[in-house]
Image 1 (cartoon, helix red, strand yellow):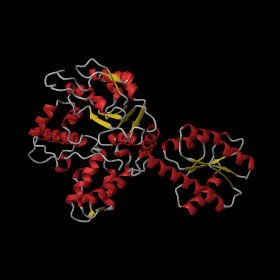
Image 2 (cartoon, rainbow, N blue to C red; image 1 turned 180 degrees about the vertical axis):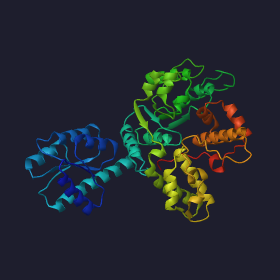
Image 3 (cartoon, one colour; image 1 turned 60 degrees about the vertical axis):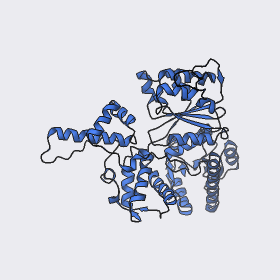
Length: 462
């Protein structure tokens, strides 16, 4: 709850009443710019704002709420009860009107009603979006959720950005499931996992005899997605030639199969995702600027886990409950110290890395409480994994070459951890040839830990 008023006595009086009677956290600001900044950066359920016929700040706040389609409930406040101000406030969009002359019980009743209506709106929106079990309460993930709600009712193209393991595909699935196309298919294709020479056939299909091995006509993903949605993951890895063809589909909604001459018309909504900085790719000449602007109509950025640390305990509990049901074992709890270690860790693999760790402790830790000693060294030692670790232990008898080899091994392991042990992505991160990386992994006897070998689905919503 947010109070906007320049009089500190009013703020103190209202804050004390609300915190005492409603047991909720109250923030206070004294100028309009600070109030708008709070509403832009945080999820505010209710704002109590100074209101009078001559106060332009109240109109500015109401205008901001309407313009940005925010669900914040606006409560107009005045030092004196005024029928005229009450009517004016309600006409302008205020949820309710209170004054310093009102009975404290009436003030609390009005605020509780505003909070209750706000909660009901959230429940209805979650139900409509089929993502009522969203895991996270941080402002960053709430902003993602809010944008998903807005774009789901449209057919607008969406570009989802974020690091590997943040849950971009699940954001796309939430958009599709909540759209008017939910009864039609959502087709997923990873542009980085399919060789360029095969990707065109995967996307658009091919005619019989179009190339060696094309023994029959194949329907492409765009045809399969007709009437529904196609999700192009890792769009930044698409070749320049295919970018041109995709641009045409976006512009004209038609294409030809490989080796075909007949144009096929499709009605497909395109959602795309990437962990790359496409603006930098445009500067480097590897991504078309016109395609970027066609895809980036509505951008959604999924924040990395290190930027939503308050969600980590919630995610830990979510994964442990899910794993307990799956393996038929009692749910484990975490000591305060171990939770603090998890919150402080940088999580280069994001939610995927956290999920893998939860499975590891669920299977391997025998006690009901997970202690710091049960966590991997990289976490209990406070290693900031988002940066290449150059930590080297100087031991007797080690030569300079030995130290360099140890540094290389640490660096490669960091890159592999950050990319969920996908060697192609790790080689890109390290700016080396994939073959060279594979040779170094063999030479340095680097082995993937068992918890990292299995690729598990990213979880944000269930």
